[in-house]
Image 1 (cartoon, rainbow, N blue to C red):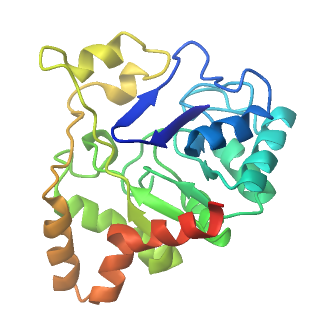
Image 2 (cartoon, one colour):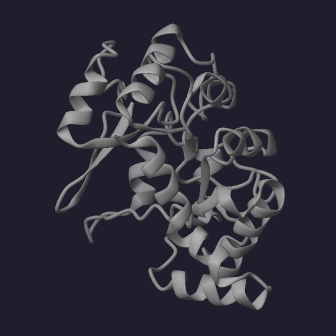
Length: 246
């Protein structure tokens, strides 16, 4: 599992060897919740005790994974399907009793990449009442440049497929040591980031913070209402958080 908690600073910690923060014990979900964790991924690219990753041989949601999803629903923790394999996500969304999210995943129809998601996954997420967060990383966008136009195209695609209530933004910034490169980090773990899918000419480029204003202007120019733009830039995820968190 990969998890995050909201504190004075954003802090994300994960173990590339296992991604099993629960150590096979579903009861730890409630402990993490008490510590402030409000969202967890089921997998991070590779398989773990709960289910399959998007860059692995997806075996589906395990019996342990089903217990974890049930416990997350019980305590009020958001279930996040990004980085998770197709079969496992479909199992999750069938089993979940609360809205499920893809926090940062783009439509595979617009950019064929293992981290992106199919129309079936988008529809299943919307059926739970959840939200698909369009991400701003160049690997997963159709134009390679992490532009506001590419984000707008992805946002519009999801809206047209399942409705405006089920699309948001999950830009996925990556803080780095100025002397380091993310490409070098990815190359050091080819099992988690297959070189064929993360090699040039697809750069790991972040969409800049100013994209929110640019994206809003593009959507309004395409005829979107201010109400619908607000849903995309935050209100849809707030709705899910209010529905799930206790």
